[in-house]
Image (cartoon, rainbow, N blue to C red; front, side):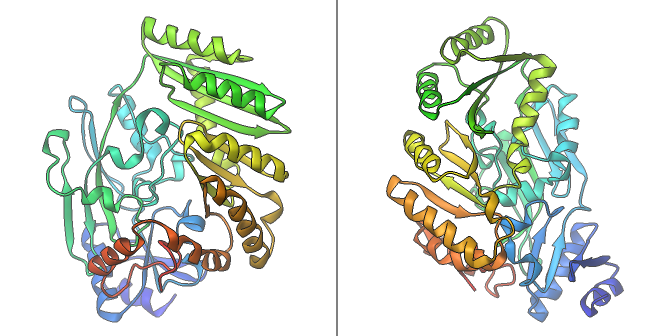
Length: 409
């Protein structure tokens, strides 16, 4: 047990070692404040986390560059659920599966539908800014955050927004915190907007041997008036598999299904519970790929050119959200490679994709590779503004990351 954990234990705060790193496990907001106040006084760097399912790509320095890991996993109470208003308020340590189970009984669907909901906490999802395949219809996760309670780096508690849609006023700082990866504050509690659960679900699948043929079907799908819940393309064992998930009610849903069937000519049409199971598999697709070594972002109109270029490279696996212009890219030969090789390979792909208007971000690579690739991220728009916000909210740099956003030490 480290001296730091022993000192926290004397204050009633439990902890343990995670890969040799001290990990604090507060059970309430007051204990979170106590940890942060001690860190502020003693100059201790703190790295927030939930259950750790996304640490390798959200905060790759977690194993070597933090004095103390702080997990909110034990703050796991559902504070309020208002079915009539379609809102849910919960502490950061609640898992997404726990929240989905609660709102399902009230006739609602939880957004975002993130991979591995059993090991993904609400705080971790919001800190990562993680959306699921349902972003195609529902929009990004930050659009559904109504309010937050957070702890700032010195232990001060702050609130932004509210718990009900009609009570959301003031600056949307909760949307600023969403996607900040724990570099601005510790998320303690959040309120989410929910959606009514549809009566009918249909999942359609089309597999093609040629990329151009599946891209032609995607162009036809884009011209339809229906709005899929999800629209995902994966390269699968030498072929391309296109998934379209639909939800709705009555005649309108059946018309959407017929329109998609007409242009997709699917080999599989799944209904009801089978469609739900297929959507869950689609939701977990990125996680089953090990999250991939990189994420590629571009405009949907440019996605076809990006996919053709990646196909020319060969040896790559990816999933693409066709309506969003987002890819999860996996390079199987890089998983056990030295950091130098990971940097060289991803920089090579970046040089190929940048002229096409695509941005490549490293994801699940070694911490050293993240550090070496980070300077390229300094070309992001508004990075100076982001750094000034960090300096304002965290003047001592207790929560700062050397790899996000940009290279900042």
